[in-house]
Image (tube, rainbow, N blue to C red; front, side):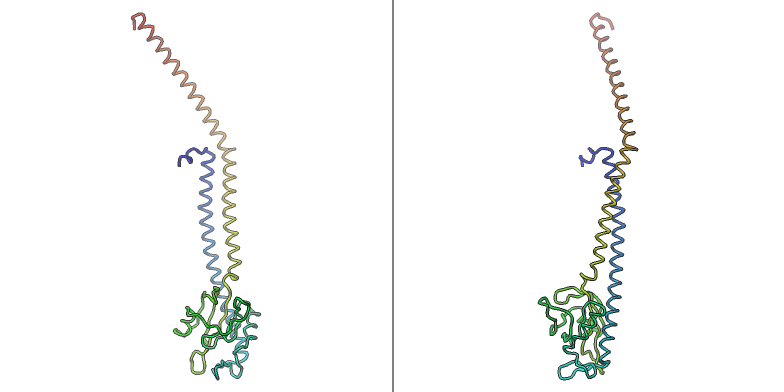
Length: 254
């Protein structure tokens, strides 16, 4: 705290400008970042809805009624187990990943495991999507982890003729990939805010030194000189009175 009071006038004004710029710029940047995140979430939902429409269009291209027969999921007469061409088509058309589940088991998927193989045969984790599909019997949209990787996802139930859930259509996009552009923009905003703050400090310090600091320092110097003159005159008067007092005491007069 003592060091703060030891700063020059220019330094103090520069510090005030810096703190003001950081406060105002930081507030504006924070609002912008929040709005960007909201916009990103909205765009993610729109992207998932688009991908899901494409997935259903591709799936219904081979059949619009679905049944379980001999441990396999059928779209009319087409066996969906291992029919990876369908999910690959979805991924090629809209990006991201797609999966067809029989029950909660992946039977055709473009989701890859860490070793590069398809995640066929793996099961849907007991997460919010699983609860929405099998317990609430409704679609799910949101972020879940798939094989340890977070995805923005959409899950729709597949019903048979008896309105029983016999499978799931899934589409998803890795959150890291989807938000990569937004995160780059956020970094740019933070960088521009800091740079603007530093630039504002530099301009303020320069202006204060040239336009305000020098006149003020000149006035301060003048006041100091006047103070010295006044102090010198007061000292001379005191010395004169002291000499007069000594003479009076010496000769016995006052």
